[in-house]
Length: 536
Image 1 (cartoon, one colour):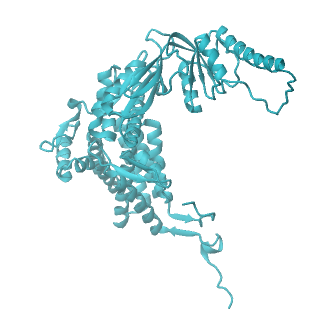
Image 2: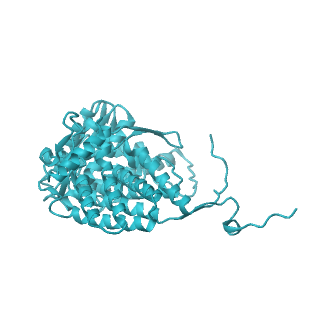
Image 3: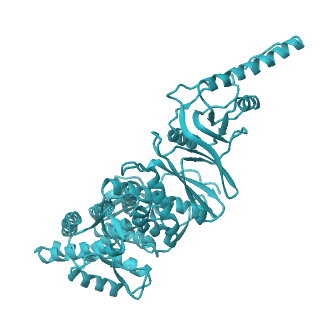
C-alpha cells in the first residue's frame, strides 16, 4: 500500500519535528513562562524559601538565588528560555533583581493569558504593555519616585543600602555579611569611586560566618615554601612555569667517562641554578610566585638568598594575583624587568582558625590601586558559595550606586506607586489597550504580594491597604516583613531603599521579554540530534 502524502509542515521539515501554532502556541508559551515564575516566586525577598537543586552531574545547590537556580536547571522550553535570558542579563549587568525579573515577566504573561481568554487580541495586549512600560519608566525617572541619593561611601552607609540585596539571598545572615561589604568598599574606594574587581573573596572552609573578616590586600591560600614568612616593600615576580631546570623538548645523551666528569656535570647544574636565582635577586625581586613545580635545588638557593617562594596551583588564581599586585605573568624563568615586577608594601602570613594564608597588602597611602579581600568562613560548602554570590551581588549593586546614586523606596513601595500611576493612565485610555494597562498594574502588584505571602501575611489585605496609602499620597509605604501586626511601613523613613537603575533595568528587560514571548504564534521544534547515551 503506498504511503500517504505528507501535508503542511511535515512535507517541509524532517521527521519528528513538532509544532504548536495559533492560540495553542501562544497559550503554551504563556503556560511555560508562568510555571517558571511559580517555581522561583517563593524565593523572593528576605523571608523567601530555599530551593534544593541537583544538576545533571549530581551536584546539589541549596540556595534561593534565582540566577543560580535557573543556571542549574536545564530548561528546554524555548519561550521559558527567553525569560531566563532576561533574568541572567539582569544578574550580570546589575547584580540583583533576577528573581523579580522572572516573577514580573511570568505574571505579565499570566495576565495576558487571561485577557486572551476574554477575547482581546495579542496586538491589543502588546500595545497596552508597550504603553505601560513607557509610562512607568518615565514615572521612575520623575522626582516623585526618588526617595534618596547615595552620597557617602562609608561602612555604615553601604551596609545599610546593600542590606535589602543581601537579605534577599541570605535572610538574617545579612546582619553579618552587609557590614563586611561596607568595610570592603570603604577600604578600596578612592574619591567616591571603585571597581568591583578591586574586591575579592577568599573562601576558607571551617568555623562559622561570624569569623569572616575583611583584609586589605590579596589573600593567597598558600604559604611560603622557604622560612621567609614576612617582608616589607616586596617586589614580586610571577612565573607561569616551574621554578626548576627547563626541560628540553628532545632527549639528549651525556657521556660521562670518569668520576671527575660526573662531579663537574653536577657542579655545572648547581652553578647554573645559582646564577639564575642570583640574576632574579639582582633584578630587585624578593618574592617569587610560581605556578609550576619547585625544584629542591632552586628552593635551596632561594632560601640562601632570602627569597619568599609561593606556589599557586590554579592558573586563574595566578593571573588574579598578578593583576592585583601589578605584575606581568612570565612564561620563562628569566629575571623580570622593572615594568614586569609587581609590588606590595607588605607580605605576611596570618592564621584564620586552623588555616594559614599569605596576605600581600598595600597601605592606604600607596599609589597602587586598593585591593580588599573578604575572607569568608563557613561550615558547609553550600553556605559559603551562597554567601560568595551575595557578596558579589552587594558589591555590584554598590558599584552601580556610585555611577547612578538615585534610590527609590523598597519593600514593594515603588511597584505599588507605579501600579497606582498605571491605573490612572488606564482610566484616561479610550481603546482596548486600557485592559492590558490594568493587567500590567496587577502584574506590578505581584512583587509586594509575594513579599507579603512569604512573610506570612494576608496578601490581599496588604495590597488593598497599600493601594489606599497610595491614594492618600503615601508613595513610600511598603510591606513590613519584620512585623506581621503592622504590615505597612514607610520604607523611606526606615531606610529600606532600592537602586533605581536596578529597578529600571529589571522592569524594562522583563517587559521586553514578555512582549517578545507574546509575539510568537508558531513554535517549531526539530527532533533532538541523536548521540551516545550519557554515562552513569
